[in-house]
Image: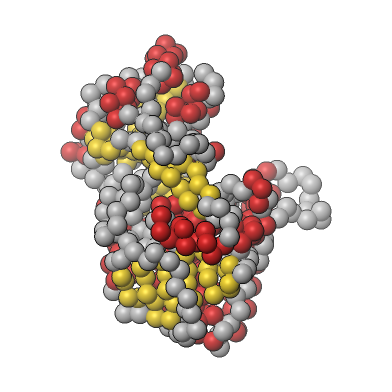
Length: 474
């Protein structure tokens, strides 16, 4: 087996992070990305780490599970988390990034690293006699998916994932929307993120065109009354969807359901999901709307907005007709319509160790969505660990040690290697993946306090793991 060199298949979030971590440890990396030679149904560019669905990396509020995972990644020096922070756009308490800056910055960082050799071609099978990280994500090519199927002896699994529409900011009716974050919760802004008047932001007090009031909120909100909601709901129920053609069954991931699928589950499902009005108050009425659609800016120029949680599989003409029923979007021009694509992932609990190595062939690692984690940060996290583990193996045969189970990183690895293989579903980081607090913990702690305590334990365990790794390399 080749020493001091690894092959990474896939230049998405996981593959890019893995390549950086391995290269920083002195390993030569061959990074294969099939785009633009072989396009995918969802990607628009040939850039590495292109964000396809949303531009949000979820909550950045301290002592939440998504924050904990990001904090752990920061402490392990994640390249992509560092770049995400540099490319952040206002998004309440979430970390959202400017797509137009993020992917180019990651691509530049990877391509400037002398130990990373980028190959723009498709690998149709997993190479032998070299350490390999498979990070091809949900849109793994048919040829490579067949190779993985043959290697693992398992049927390939898949489900369907959907993409939210993006609207041109200039076409939003400022008189009908207001800017606010839920419960008024905004994260501190970088002064460099001030916006010019031509950004088409809306002032929350007047509802007039103008630059965003920095205290008003990071989202635009389209309020609906009960009658407007009912019309929208009925139109959604009768809308024409795109035929799946060659796919027989639409197995959607529960955490990313299309809005038409949510509507079929009941009249109020949307009002408790992407159209929930909780934590919002329309400044023109002083009341909470019956329902609300939130729009999140796509970049710092604020010239385009993402309809939060509005992923769908409707025909484009139907999307235009129905989404224009939302107050404020009557004349909206859509820069991108919602889409749907197949996601591929392996039955990881049967196949992988907690170190993300293939049980049957430990020189092969899986990282990112193909191993059964869901979410941008979760993909980055597994890529980071696979890169660190593969580098240790390549440099001196060091046997990888997974992070402690009490950490967010360790909990993700434990989930993908120990979940019920009979009903394996991709997972985001959540406190229920972490071990519960011990019986000695004071019973009077409320939920936020318990979560805070879990975060303290996780970060302490992470530091111990990092210190132990440092000793083995010196």
